[in-house]
Length: 245
Length: 325
Ligand SMILES: Cc1cc2nc3c(=O)[nH]c(=O)nc-3n(C[C@H](O)[C@H](O)[C@H](O)COP(=O)(O)OP(=O)(O)OC[C@H]3O[C@@H](n4cnc5c(N)ncnc54)[C@H](O)[C@@H]3O)c2cc1C
Ligand SMILES: Nc1ncnc2c1ncn2[C@@H]1O[C@H](COP(=O)(O)O)[C@@H](O)[C@H]1O
Image (cartoon, rainbow over all chains, first blue to last red; front, side, top):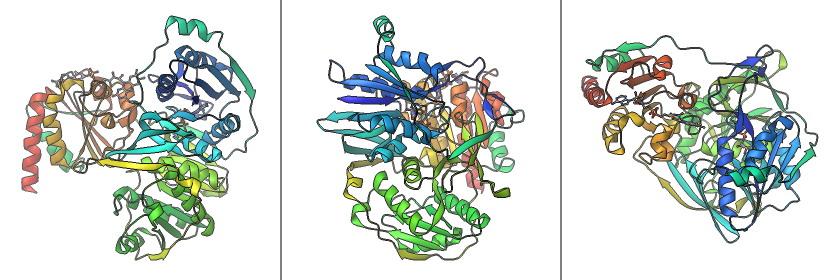
C-alpha cells in the first residue's frame, strides 16, 4: 500500500492564543508548535497498515522551513519519507491545491488527513482534496480496515455512526479511535535525521479569502455561587434568571 | 444572483439547525436584494418542504430519486453545485453538521468558491466588501474572514443564529440532476443510531461529567438529569479514553466542539483543552468539590460541592420544577 498523510504544524493545545499587528496575525512568540493531534492519529493508522514492509507512508506538509521539526517528528514516528511544499499556507484551498498537485500523478492508494487542524478548524482540506482529485472523501472516521482493494470505515454522524465501504483510492479525515497513538522510539528518532525530506516549490493559487481580524471571546462575569446545601436554588436561577431551562 | 440553502433531512424531517440555516440564508438574501431557494435531497414529504417557506425560502428544489436516497457527499455535492449554477446562486448556505463538513468543501471547489466553515454571524456587506466571522483555534478565538471570491459557500454553526418565522409557504419544484457514475463509489452498509438520545452536536442543553465521577457505574444520575432536562450527555477526554463513555461524547479540543445554551460540567476540572470545545456555550454551570478548580473562572453559575450529594438533589429540583410548570 502506498499512503500519503497530510500533516499540519499547529500551536500546542495548551497555548494561550494572542494576536499581533493590530489583531490581524496570530502571535507566534513563545508558542510551541506540534504535529496536529488528529494528523498524528492518521499517521499512526497509516503506519499500522503498512507494518512489516507492507507499503510506504509519505507525509506531506505545506509550510515554511520552520515546520521541519514537526516533519522530523512524523518521520521519527515511522513515516518512510517526507515532502514539504515550501509556502506559507493562506487557507485550506491553497493547501488542498498544493497537495492535490503533488498527489495527482503519484498513485497513492489512500490519502489520510486529520478531521481538522486545531488552529484553523476548517475541516476543509480532506473533502477539497477528494474533489480536486475526483475521488471519494470521507470524514470524520474513527475506524479504518483494509480489505483487498477497498476499505471499510466508520463515519461519525449526529447521534450515531455509519459503516461504509470505499474502493481505493480515497481521502479520509480521521479522529481519535482510528489507531493507537505511536510514540517515537530511540531508533525512530535516530533514523528520522537521515530519512528523505524533499522540498518542492509551491504552485500559484488564486486567493479566495483572507483573515482580516482576530479577536478573543469576551470574558465572562464572575461566577455566581450557590450553596451546596441548596442546589434547588441553582435550578431556580437557571429557570427564571438565565432562562435556559 | 440568488442564495441557495441546502436543507439536510434526518429521516425525512428537518431539525432546528436547518431552520436556523434557512433563516440565516434568508437574511443574507435580503441583504443582497435577492431571493432564497432551498434544495432538499432524499425522501421528504411535500408539506415538510412547503413549510420551509415560513423561514424564508420562496422556492424548494426537491431531489428525490432512488440513487440519492442515502448520503454520499460526492454525489450530493454535484447535485447542489449543479443547482447553484442553474439558480445563478453565488452564496450557498449549509448547516455545519457532520454531513455539511463533508459537503461544503467539495461544493466550494466545484463553484470556485471561498468556503467559510463554522460561521457564527451574518456576513457584513457594507461598502461592497464581504466579511464574515467564524470560530478558530478550537473556540479560543474568532476570525473575521474577508472573501474576495465571487462565490461563497458558508456553513453555519448550529445554535448560533435565531430561527425567524415570518414567511409563507414555499413552491416545491422537482429538480433532476445529472450525476455521473463515479460519484457513487462509496457504499453505505449500515447506519447505527441511538434514537432515544438527544444528539450532542445539535443539543441545546448538555450535561457533562468528568473523572470526578470515579467510574462508569456512576453515570446513572448524569443520564437521569440529562433525560429530565431533555439534554445530551457529554464527557471529558480521560473518561472516554478509559472507556467509561463512548468517544462520541468526548468534548474539547480533540473531541467535539459544542455551543449549547446550557453546559453543566460535573466533576470536570476545566483544563484548557476541555474549555476549548465548550467555552462558547451560552451559560456554563460548574459543579466541583474543589473551589480552586479552573472551571469556576469561566462559569456563570457554580456549586462547590460533592457531585454525589448535589446531583441527586438537582434531579429532585428539576422534577418539582417540571411538576409545577
Ligand atoms: C493534546 C491534548 C488534547 C486534549 N484534549 C482534550 C479534550 O478534547 N477534552 C478534554 O476534556 N480533555 C482533553 N485533554 C485532557 C485535559 O488536559 C485534562 O486532562 C482533562 O480535561 C481532565 O479531565 P477531567 O476534568 O475529567 O479530570 P481531572 O482533571 O482529573 O478532574 C476531575 C475533577 O473532578 C473534581 N472532583 C473529584 N471528585 C469530585 C466529586 N465527588 N464531586 C465533584 N467534583 C469532584 C476534582 O476536583 C477535579 O477538578 C487533552 C490533553 C492533551 C495533552
Ligand atoms: N499546511 C498543511 N499541510 C499539510 N496538511 C495540512 C495542512 N493544513 C491542514 N492539513 C491537513 O488537513 C486536515 C484538515 O485541516 P483543516 O481543513 O485546516 O481543518 C489537517 O488535519 C491536516 O491533515
